[in-house]
Image (cartoon, rainbow, N blue to C red; front, side, top):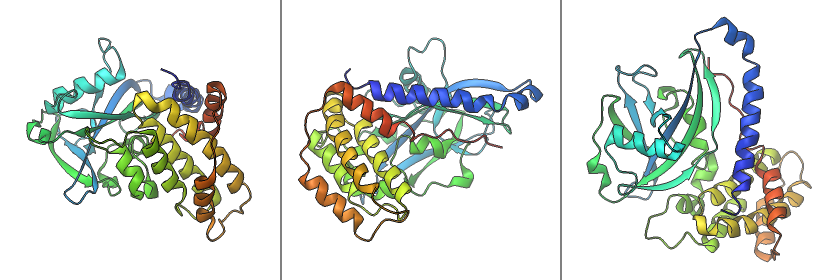
Length: 314
């Protein structure tokens, strides 16, 4: 379980920030004594269409549910006291609401950093644990919807129908799938949404996905480009096989430190060709073996501020 520290620290920092953020709602909460609080899981199902385009299944909620009627949502539900973990709760909800078996019909992809937000319209404070799974071949024919959903539809991962979504879904999605221009980086999306029999779960494949993303003109502004490159590093690590997570982090984190020194020399708008300079530097960089504690410390500093607490939904 080496190198689990960074995600725990990021989650802990996010939780601390969430608590501080939610304290700002205290006076409003006192005016709404019936505000309900619930910890929930939300699972995205992903696949590739015949042309290889990543797609996400969204489920249209019925009028028989308490919240977000007729909105598109994930497979979601509350974490029960009997659930040994949020992941176990996610698998249970998948089975109950789709009849899919998470261990045979689905492949676990990743868990996103949990977060909290308040939706005054629904009168709920939600603590959300996002997950992502991919369908195994032929598994879609086994989907049987329960009373919670009237239908489902596949959408390109970068073109979800935002006005029709349940609250918080966009925030959950960016925590398990590379957002915006990152989702269009071929090697990165291929690494995140790979098949069971793929051999690209290796450290070299992870490094290739990160290096390709870092060598792209992801944004014109320095701060946004740097944020997206760090997100690419996070997604590569978070989606790596457990056996190689430590080694992946040990390569990506020192590389991000190299990129940081380059980006600090830029103005607010990146110079033309800057991304090519980064790509060349990453080709030539020789990554030394850092001590585990040092890598974890650097990872916490690089990734810790990526997950801003969403504002209250009104």
